[in-house]
Structure formats: structure tokens, C-alpha cells
Length: 583
Image (cartoon, rainbow, N blue to C red; front, side, top):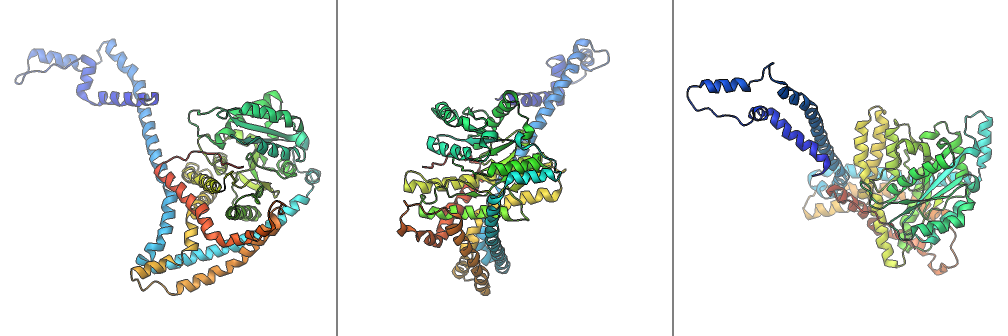
């Protein structure tokens, strides 16, 4: 029995003693005396009189009862807390099954719809086709707009922009006072990979005056201290400061992963900044990134400008478009497709005006805001959306994400083995889809924070739910949504499935080829780095042929991992964090 369970058990036992009359007699007078049937003797009457409480009871009886009242109240409170914990866990378990339930409802509607509700399901499927067409055109347009925003941001003189804002009377922090902590969680990463990340950081504007890299090491990795020491010796004098932190293994209540490591690192860095360096946390940002992140040279200059001049700097995240192009010419051809699609969507997402942005993978925020909410939660795996939701709900709904249109580069999955690369890609996609754990969290927070306007709460919660449900189901609705109903109708002899459905569906979805061509052109010729000499010229046409494999590739590395994660979440099987192997 755990220590926390003892008060509950004691409370139950004591309540029974209070409620049961005979047990009360036992507690007061010792074992009851049984009288024989028939007339009541004088001795029995005398005994009964002794048992009955009266104002004249001696102090050695009244005092224990008076002393027992606080224990009784404490036990009752403990029992209620235990019941509340059980109830909240049951609710959370039910909400954890919600993404899978809705995903399966949509997917299986292709089979039961033609049998039970042919006309309504056909109309709903056409409605989804219209929604998909709108999303496709919207993405295509904003890929173009997003790339223009990138070019504009690259040409911007961010110090001049800051100076102009200050000259116009905008209240701002002093440029020279701003510092940027960059936490780099890593576990068994190759030294060459970390060296490349630090080298790019050192080349960023203001690195020597403002940037503070933090190598967030895991003590479970043998030799991590020696690795960190070597990198600090090599790069330490190229930054304002440079630290290494060492996250212990198997701390109680923690889940191994990026979130728990970052939380540990941030707390250690807070002490180093305030006590050792005397830095005011109001002037500090903290950036979460990956071990393979390559920042744009002007990213931190832009961040300094936007952070220093923003009136709500302590309630903002900043997000750059993430391009999975670091090793795009080295990954297997089929996996260039999800890497390219992911990069295009990042650029388009940040270019939209009327949107809700969630931070993803590499993002920045005020160090003070991170401290206000107790830093990253240590019991979650996907930390980016969760950290935003935590800040949003705990800080009154005033937290937003704003774009910095200066792309950062990340690696695609690539291992030493060609075929193992596909396995690692699947595992990484499943880990990303494990973000469905934010669905129950967001729904519970929605009801716990009535002080936040309802529409703001609902929009963010709906965005989380919609994203994960469509992640698992949209492939089925778009790719086979026209065929399965006809197959089911033919097998079961249902002759009244609308014959106009297929024609209308084709007419709606065929124009989506337009934005798809735009995305192919931008991925192949505009955003992707030039072909290196090591890449054979005769293989160049493969980058166009890969788009014809979109259906199977997106099934195995998008829809299937999402369903896998949602099944595990629904049945309560925790996903273990495993670092993706990247050669």
C-alpha cells in the first residue's frame, strides 16, 4: 500500500466506526454485554445507563472524541480527493479514446454509409471533397505568399527596423540587453551533428553578444560529459555564454524525452543566468530546437527585434517555417515526398492571416513566460503543442504564436541502412501523432478555465481535435472515398447509392491538380537546395516521379502511424520515446 493510500483506508475504517452504532459502543465501553431475553434486570438497566452518553461523562471519554474530529475531517477530505482522482482518470480515459472513435467513425462510414444512410453519407462525403479542394487551393496560394514573405524577411535589416520603431516612440527593451537561450536536447547524437548545429548558431548575427547555447545532455548516455566538455571547449568563446546540463535518468513522475530534458535544463539555466551572470529574465528568450536544427543567419536578429518591440512580448511564441531539406538529396526517394509536403505546409501555414498557429518542433518564447507556467511538463512526449496549450490556459488565454519568416532547417530521417530508414520514418511519424494526447488535455482545460472567452477556448481545442482526427482519416476519405461505397453497394446489392456521386466527386477534386502542380514546382525548383554533385544526374527525374507514389507513401507514413498512435492512446498503452536515428 502506498503512503498516499493510508489516510483513505483509515478514513473508511473510522467512518464505519462512527456510523455503526454497535461499533460506537465498542469504541466507548468495550465489548457489549448481551442480556437474556425476557424481563430486563436491574443490572442490565444499570449497564445501559452507563453506556448512554451524558454531559456528566468523564473527561477521559470526551477528550478522545474531541481529538478524533480533526482526523475524521482529514480522512473525509482524503477520501473525497481519492474519489475525485478516480473520477478524473475515468474521464481522461474516455477522452483519450475520442480521437480514435471519431477517426473510425469517419473511416467506417465508407462501409456502413451505403447500407444505412446512403444519401446523407454521400452528401457529407461531397462536403468533405469541397473542404479538401478549398484546403488544397488555400495551401497552394499560401505557399506562394509564404515564399514571398521569406524573401522579404531575408532582405530586412532587423536592427534598422528596431531603431525605426524606437524612434517612433514604441516602448522597447534595449537591443543590447536581450539574450537568447537555445536549448539543444540530445541523446546519443553524433558529435558531428551537434558540431554542425553549433557552427550554424555561431554564424548567426549577434552570436557573440546575445546567444547562449545549452547542451541538454542525458546522464543515461555514457560519455555525455566528455562530449559536452569537448564541444564547449571548441565553441564556448564564440557565444555570449555556453552551458551543459545533465538530465538524470528515471526521475519519478517523468517520461523520458525532449520535454522532461528541456524542463530540467531550463531550471538549471535560470539559476546560472540570474545568480552567476546577473541577467534579468525579462530580457531573455528561450528557444527549443532539435540536435540537427540549422537556424537562418538572421533568425535571432529578427527575434531580438520582434521580442524587444512587442507590447505583449511575455505572452508570445515565435515560430519559423521548418524545412526538412538538410539532407533531402540523401534520404530515400519515397521519403522525400513527406519531407517536401511537410516543408510546404510549414511555409503556407505561417503565411495565412486568419489562422491559429501552434508552435512546432523549433520555436521561441519569453523565458519569463516559461518560468511562469513551471516550464515544460515532464510527463509528456510531444512538447510543442502541449507547451502552448499550457501557457494559453494558465495565462488567461492571452498567448498567441507569431511567425518569423526565416526558415530553419532540419534533417529528414536517414539511417545507415536503406530499409531501416523506412522503419525509423514510421516510428517518428507515430511519435509525432502521439500528440493526440493533447486532445483530452485541451478538452479538460476548456472546462477548467471559464475566465477565458468561450470562443477562444473552443477554437484551440477544436484545432487540436480536428488535426488529429483528419490526420488518421483524411487519406481514406480522399483516396478511396469514391470507391469503397460503390464496392459495398455492389456486394450487398444496394442499388440506391447515388449514381451522381462519383461524377460530382471527380469534378470537385480534379481541379486540385492545379495547386498540386504549384507545390511540386516550389518544392523542386524554389525551396529545395540545389542538387549536389554527388547526386547522379540520371536520378534527377525521380523527384517528379515520386509524386505519383503519393497515395501509398502517405498511407504508410501519415495515416497508418496516426491510427497506430490513436489505438495505443485509446487502450492506455504508453508510447516510449525513442530518438530517431539520423546518419
